[in-house]
Length: 371
Image 1 (spheres, one colour):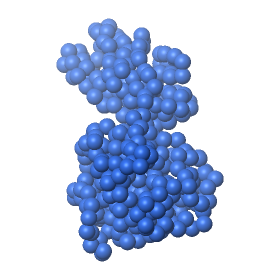
Image 2: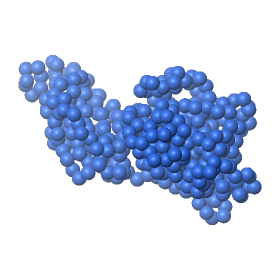
Image 3: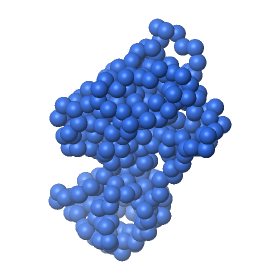
Image 4: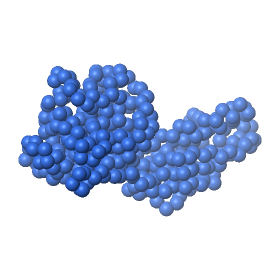
């Protein structure tokens, strides 16, 4: 099988039909290219390469397949169609519904059918627009940038292996539509809240404030900021649940990081030079590329508080949100890794926990809100 040389690759796997065949390049248009491969097994894999920095949405992808029986007689000409396909920049997306019916039909009608050729590829893909909004505060100014996250379901937990025992069992979770902070809450945003409420400003450890993510905040601090923002805007802000956080961070992927299984270089801020970044401590928010949901810094930079209580295995609390009056001895989940941690902790499935009153130079947060 020929090795596919991919630059800023987004791969789309479509289940379609049967057999073994060499790679066949079938189309190239503008800054999106498409190749097809039929490896050993029951799959036709379409590789979609997105050379743009932005995400695309494909209304449909269609290709014709020539099907022969074991005697090399053409028995069918079939069209394989996938609709509403997400094509993120630099991430792998899996779509497993297209072609299931076709596989069953072929197996019922023909003796050991196989696809021997793909041709006449057609598709319509357009740049995807991130739904970003900002709620207005009572003084007429705007709140933090938020992104609408679509409803969906995903497999939660250590899908790739190599994680902790508390990242199991792997289980499917459904998440309703909600909004998530486009960035981690910054010092500028938190200082504004502290000044408005007479609250003591948190220390920046001498690294700078402004557009850097706020650090040295407890779970109580983060929750207080969410409550203040709710009063100011008339909308219900809170910390995300652990399940919401992982769903949003994965952005439809099942790899270690939203862009793939390798940490790569200069894609995130983590411990020393393990991520190939140039930041000694925290990085200004948005210093690296966003995932396909439009969220920045879900990998590294600072740990992010959630409103879910920690358990050493998943039993359902990851989908629940405790908003008020936690026990001082309880532990809340934090997600995303930080500048102080290695790449293992920065995986989409990675988990950490702290007591609600703890503050550290590697801990911050981002907000969520319901429609």
